[in-house]
Length: 121
Image 1 (cartoon, rainbow, N blue to C red):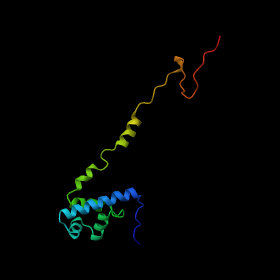
Image 2: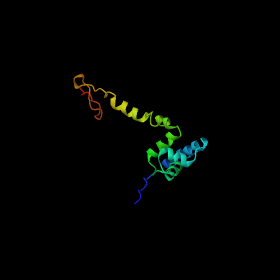
Image 3: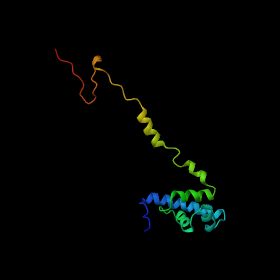
Image 4: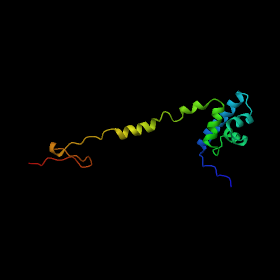
């Protein structure tokens, strides 16, 4: 029984399709046949077709092997290298908590409570 392809949202499918097209164009620019690239990558021609079509069922390893055959494997170094959101979340977790004033200073420490009122004389 064949494996079921993973669920892929339209935006993700577009990204995969664009990657596959760039890989196909890179192969054609190098004047390499699909049979040669598949052989050098150690994958079948049908798997190469899937990679070049952006099929989500093709394994990441197949994409990496094709990149390597085309001499583009170092392009992977840039993927997720600049994790701005992750670093921001990490920085927020490392930030010291806001300081609270103590009762001894005559201030309330719970910001949810209304401000203290002075008794009238």
